[in-house]
View 1 (cartoon, rainbow, N blue to C red):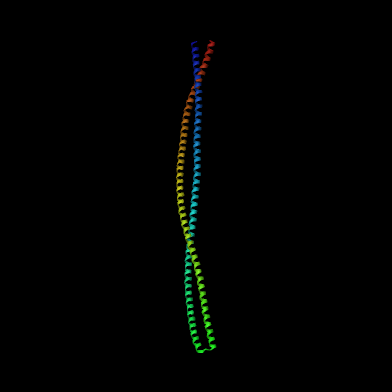
View 2 (tube, rainbow, N blue to C red; view 1 turned 60 degrees about the horizontal axis):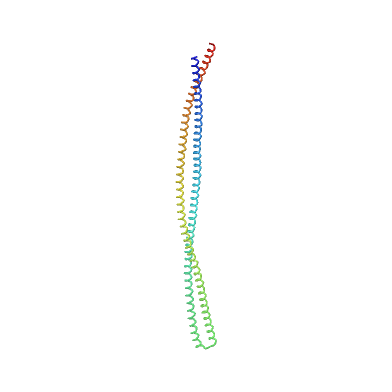
Length: 317
């Protein structure tokens, strides 16, 4: 009976140990499931963080590329506009300088022509005046001589025929004097016409001078605009340099983000390695507990069989 009681106590203890082992196995399985869930959650969070960092980095790279392309396009456009404006101003300035040279040459030619015309006209005028003066003097001298001769002949001859002839000669000489006076008047009119032409040429020359002054003023304005364009070009160059500095700073930020991304990847790898080590340790512990539980179950089964055999033996006895 003692042995039976002892056997029953032992069976009870073995059943208690079996229940404890099963409870411990269930607890370990629960802890393992919890560890797996925590590991999955950690991996998911790390993947999400890595994906978010990757997406942020990609978005920043895309934005950086767009900003860089836009800045380069604006820079090229500013340079092209500045170059076109500068070329246009230089071309206009060259044309104005050529026009100024043409006007100066034309002015010199007009002045030379006026001087030549004035010189020729003055020489011709002086020659004509001298000729007319000589003719007038000769006609006056001839008239005086004729009058003297006429008076002498009138006194000498006193005939009607000779008087008529001398009167006709005097009339002819007077007619010649009148013709000379008319020619002198014509020459004076020609001189007035030439003076009017000289006045018109002088007026044209003054207009040419005004045009030259206007062209010089425009050249000065174009030079001022050229200087202004040069200043604007310097400002654009400075703005481009600032944009390049901004791009370099953005590239530095992008490199820092890349380093942060690599750091996150390294942290994720190390965390996953640690989780793998922890899971491996838990699996080993669970495997040992499982083996212990299986051994306890086998021992309990053996004890149960022994108890059954002992009960059968006791019944037979």
